[in-house]
Amino acid sequence: MGTDVVPTLSSSQILREVFGYEQFRGPQEAIVSHVISGGDALVLMPTGGGKSLCYQIPAIARQQAGQGVTVVISPLIALMHDQVGALHEAGVEAEFLNSTLTGEQASALEKRLLRADLTMLYAAPERITTPRFLALLDSLHERGLLSMFAIDEAHCVSQWGHDFRPEYRALTVLHERYAGVPRMALTATADALTRADIVERLQLEDAQQFVSSFDRPNIRYKIVEKKDATQQLLRFIQHEHEGDAGIVYCQSRRKVEDIAQTLCAAGLNALPYHAGLDPMVRQTHQDSFLREDGIVMVATIAFGMGIDKPDVRFVAHLDMPKNIEGYYQETGRAGRDGAPANAWMGYGLQDVVNQRRMIDESPAGDDFKQVMRGKLDALLTLAEGADCRRVRLLAYFDEASLPCMNCDNCLNPPNVWDGTDAARKLLSTIYRVQQASGISFGAGHIMDIVRGKTTDKVTQFGHEGLTTFGIGASFSELQLRGVLRQLIATGALNVDGQAFNTLQLTEQSRAVLKGEVAVRLRESVSTPAERKTKRGASPSSKPNAAPLTLDDAAQLRFAALKAWRGEVAREHNLPAYVIFHDATLAAIAERVPQTLDDLQGISGIGAKKLEAYGEEVLRVVGL
Image 1 (tube, rainbow, N blue to C red):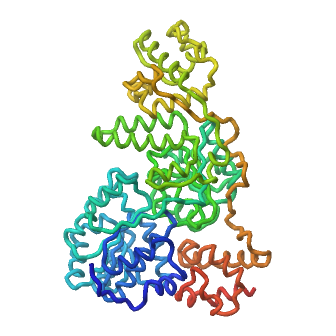
Image 2 (image 1 turned 120 degrees about the vertical axis):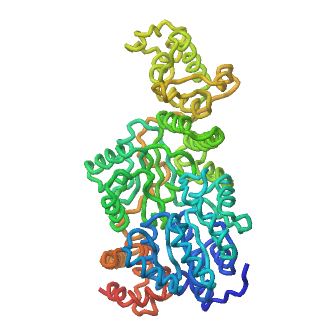
Image 3 (image 1 turned 180 degrees about the vertical axis):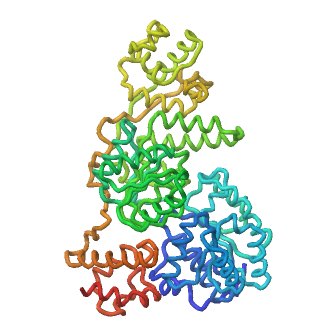
């Protein structure tokens, strides 16, 4: 670790004068100090926690001290564009090198890089490891002008992470080729297994680890049992988030298209996003979401990484993710501004079946499949649990917490019932059906037999003559589906995807049949998913509304400032929040500044923005 880095400005001065913030949050100051002095770091910080500043401030400080250029490895073009745009607004010399540049532009930028004429250069991992780019880095390194590497979205390097990208593995070359250059890896989501993999793959064994709390207290978690999922979603948005920006995640491209059409037909401003769309359409939809108010993006998980939009008021899942890391990462895109937001998910038996089948049918090795099953089981336990969602979520990341009183289970505690008897009756029926017919059947048929329903299929196979026919007539279909979900989740039942999703007994079935394993479940609720919570109203915050703390005159100033900001953002081809966050506009509207000096000290107004926009802000406030 070097100790001779003496920047022109201290880290606190850079925070205040460049970015307009008075003080660091959480562990930011410790991270920044460690990295400025040349230390390697692994940073785990939740979405919205200020990860970017953890490498941007050291990059500026080290560049001022003559250390040269910081290279930021980022996986998405859109993220590079917006982060570089935000740095330009703050007066920082930053650029990106990616496929959107012409050959002439790329060549000119490479010359600037060789002159160390930049503070930061953003590039994708697959570009970093090309011979051409490594030659550029070699030249900088030989002259002592390669300051630092910042590897964003570092969980992508891990096979255990929720968004594994093979090109990240090649980044080991950075340590091998430039051993003396500090490296920091940053991510918002990594359990202990993924964290260990990041350290090993990126050779960060000697790096100091900074792990922040994973808690996002402004997000209200709500998980509902699917009954009519599309209508449940529609009611949720209309009742709690009409006019708000949000993201709806679906598993398939076709479902994305269908849901987007349904939402549009209901009068919502919804757009589809998936890998099958024309790239220009996809980019246009993403730009609209980032730059306009109140758009609902219906998407596959191809959308979202690096989305910095602060005022996403809800994230909804119509299909269950693969694991808690994916769920946490995706829900974390809501409420980045710290204002109340909702994370809503609908799940059902078919979700469990689909996820189990995808794991079982994958070409991966048995060890990998076992880890993936464990991760899925943790998510199913979160969904089925009757206790605090946040306590379970944080416990997955080895963080202890108390009940939050801001999730569906805390606000409306569900009843719990003993499903052991129902489980034994279901398993006994599956056994007898296989004995009698020599073939397996799906969940619907098994439930019909247990409940004593004489369907055409039951009659066709003579299953009304089974001794278990009708033995569970007292159980509802919803109850039996819940029992089947848990039996599949715990491995007491297997789903054969090659045979029309039929149910098969496993070794673990025996313990349940003997009554050695209890099956306890949350009671199925028949009330609509969008029902307001017992304690207080929805956490919705309308996109065009000023904070409630502002008086009428201040709210008018806030609205005028938002309209002005929108015009500036369109001129600069940037999202509005890159110019100023809503919180900054609200503070301006409340303070009613009369001079440029009055604007100083307002969070989010650095020296460059004060110079660029100060007079215009005063004009708008004075109208």
